[in-house]
Length: 413
Image (cartoon, rainbow, N blue to C red; front, side, top):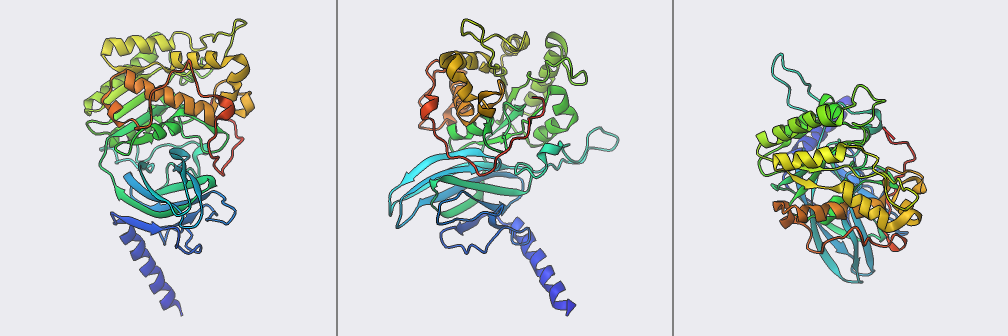
């Protein structure tokens, strides 16, 4: 009786290996049996205990793919009913926002998703490094680091038909930073890095390597920089935003004084990026919500933003001054409304919710255009520009929520 079971297991293993070697995946979620749930052996399926339901609950669909960039083409809509579909990828990266379809209307949309694992090329003999990125405990189970391309379908009436996935040879925008940049895994928190995908077109990928609590030093010792450099190629972009945690003198192991160590580490990062023919972009840290009695934002970052500005000028590196843009944004909202852009129902003065992250991503997109980066050619066609002095009204902002929620404190908060 054991032979058939062993034979079946062997056949499943062969099928799984063959699936990983594929270069084109095509599924019709409108006809796919709901029993087709994701398993490593199957290599695809409805995931995380979800599936399409009559009451329009959000659902996930995953496909086992090798590390890399993938162009995803979706057919959205339904022959019989109206649809309103928002699509996110991996850990809540916003890809498509509120695609509305009428009964019988089908539309096609395309975007690019970056998939990665923790694996690193083994270092040469006697060289420092390691074979894997060192994750912290809050990253356990993260959709960011597994060998799956995971799509999340949200909205009042998610309607999804065909899903096609093919490898994409496109420029990659790597994001390096801390919790104000990272892909926050659960509602209601969010960061600008996971919203930036919404404002770029399907000819570029975003690889968000930022993580909560990170500093220039820890990003290096945790082999996160090594991971980025192992994938970096000529023509890619590397956005670098650190400072929130580097400035903390109560963290002596990772504290970096603004004019010396912090500056030196930034210079080293720029040199490594340029060595590989990629384009570095310096980003000043978003400000904290620290109003004075006159309704102005106090600078909570000391000299760190100015050091970044001066380095960008000296090294002829593009600068996105999110420190100043966020200050304008918060002051435009004012002390009464600015908390509507922040996490924990506005009690968190540092980290953002969906609205705040969305507005800051618009600031970054505008910064790309203002810096005359070649990347500006890859901005989404419907991005018409953004003035943080005239933000979208927080009271009318709507973004379909993800089913995953988290109340865990952010590392470094």
